[in-house]
Length: 368
Image (cartoon, rainbow, N blue to C red; front, top):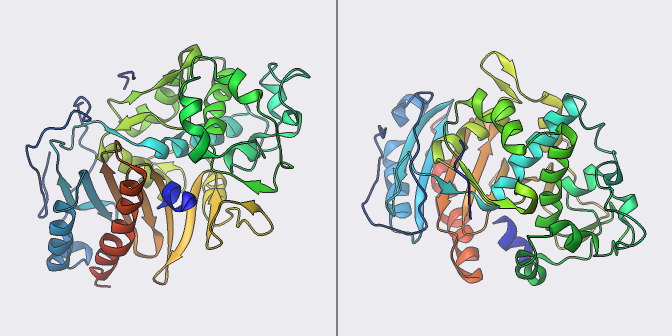
């Protein structure tokens, strides 16, 4: 159940046209400010992209009737074919991504490796964190970048049991994290681990010797035309790697499109296609790795990959039902944002609704 739930305070930094637009004016205090949008996305009729509009209308109604939904967007062949908003959200509204944030942090690690600021997957954490010493928890000198990205550091950690306590110690996260022992040999045990990705955001700042917000703007947000965001900070003024980023649904779709294009964006290669291959085709399969994971799912640089109804899914998820999903066989991308202030049972139900009802409807709508 814990793995299914994981799978299935902030800074401002940074029109609706569709046959299947849905909006309502219901207010919600969890909604964030609205930001400007560029004109990147082209909107297309579903039929022009070989999708059945009647089936998508049925999907629209099902999404509309679900609780806590803010956005639902479908992209096919690089064009928006379906877009609906609820709960007071619009295409300009910043929406919490929760753990989808992890995939964006991971992307900065890949860019850092490309540019030589990080030596590679196997570079040890001790190169970045002099805090690791004989007085900290045991075993940290054996942990490297790859272990954090794939949540196989072996840290003494249970996300369900420990996360709330960790949230109380964000003023001194390094002390909290490094005082925990490495209780499994790194690389042999999977445990979903938000603090480990928070470490990566600090690592990126130290590697570049500049603030993460500046790295993000230069390397990703500005090239993608992302004009606004909010991002929770942990101590030391560092944007949090494991959660806390808010983007519009359309800007989140740009992150997905960048990955589907293997790091290529217009005339630039923002991250090597080899990094994206490590997210998807060459993902870690968990064979021989113990821990709280599903046998049918693999992890690559924090992305999940699994088979569903005969197709391959690459996806990022976040608590409460946040989804960024790529279906390469059909050149389809799905974005969904929901209110994350929900119970564990509601979180699990959100993912069950998506996989049991919404995703099958999207796949059924494909005409070619």
